[in-house]
Image 1 (cartoon, rainbow, N blue to C red):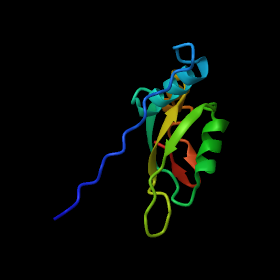
Image 2 (image 1 turned 120 degrees about the vertical axis):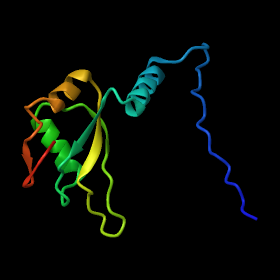
Image 3 (image 1 turned 60 degrees about the vertical axis):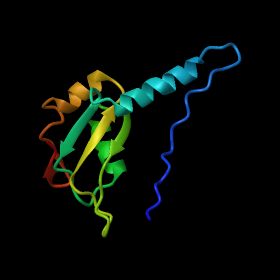
Length: 115
């Protein structure tokens, strides 16, 4: 008979002694909501297989998209190389729009073109 795994549940945000959440907690909550939201996420493809997260972050920094919250870049299990695509979550809509504009879209990184 198979055992069922218990699902780990996220703890609810804790409140401070005054009964409300602090500004730091609310800022952290907004960052978490942005990370799971599709509004701030951009799908990118054409990434070089040999690049690292730092290379991709530097590429976006050089094109004016400095406020990256999260990068989800899948890798092959056997070799650890990037699969050539990923999702980048930005902190602001301006950076997302800039990443989707012609300033970044179609630019060369490591011999491949970002789309």
